[in-house]
Image (cartoon, rainbow, N blue to C red; front, side, top):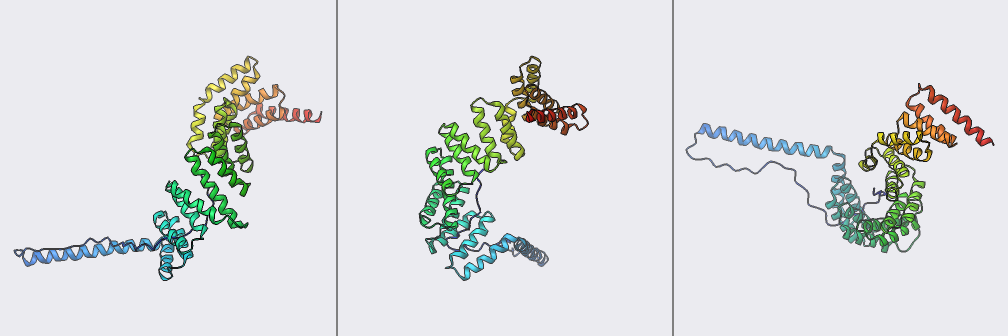
Amino acid sequence: MDPVDTVEAASSSHAPAPISTDTDPARSAKLDTWLTVGVWVVGASLVLFAGFFGWSVYAQAQAARLSSPAMQVIDALQKQVDATPKDPTLHSRLAEALGTAGMFDRATAELIIAVKLDPTFAGGYENLGAIAMTQKNYSDAEKYFNKVLELTSTGDYQNVNQRRDEAYFYLGEIALIQKRYEDAVGYFNAAIRVRKDASDSYLRLGQAYAGLGQKDQAKEQINIALAFDPHFAEAHYELGKLLISEGDKVNAAWEFRAALDSMPDQPDPQAALDALGPYEEWYAAASKAWLAGDEAAALDDVRIARAISPDSYDAAMLNGRILDKIRDFAGAADAYAVAFKVDSSSKEATSAFALSVEASRTAGAK
């Protein structure tokens, strides 16, 4: 995930030439002298019809363009820029509109004009860097973000801090992409010094530490990210990967489940859960361990089964029984509550839940 705060669009370069939308092809007709007048008339009428058809296509294209809110804004801003070409703010606004419409090359051109007109325009360089990142032009992006840091090296107000935070963050992203992990650690730490509550900075810092093989530091930073944003799907997924690498399948499975619950359409958490194996195997292993009296193994196996299939009534009930046996009555009540949610007609789940709640209260009173 690269979470990016919305920034003021900077402008640049010379205003691009207007794009013609006339789709009528140039036509020329040569009539042989042996054609009859009747044939010529027919031919002439076809040429006239073709001309009319071409104009209709042009008119429709213009109407479609004018009906698009984005293009209306772009056209209006372009007229303002043409009228006042020395105003960097207007070039910046036009660049913002172009960027919103996905016209990154034209937006870059406008931004370059803006920073030429005003070499201290930090917002212009910041947006040039953001566009370069979008286009995976990391060398230019790095150059632009370093320019932002240079221009914001003095001052202590919100705009400066926001720009420095984002510049450090994106420089860290570039270093992370290029596997320059030590540089990435430095940049993300610098971003956090500017803004201490940005969950994505802690996540990326954790990934940088993971790249250096420093797993404990990586988990610490990712857990901080989750403290700020408990539903941060990418952070749950990255933490799950770290736990898997350490052989902790149980907690990894629950991290992958949390990631998938937060972002159901993301394929990676689902693939990670699938890689653990099918629910049936984990539930069978849990049942076997439970019958053999091995509560620890049964608990691990059933927790993985529940992470893979969170709506399983059987797994939730087995999980509750195991927790009752090891006297974790509050945890058992939670498991039975899930079972009851799956099957509200289950008298067994209702009774077990009530007993666990009462046992938890009794244990707490002692």
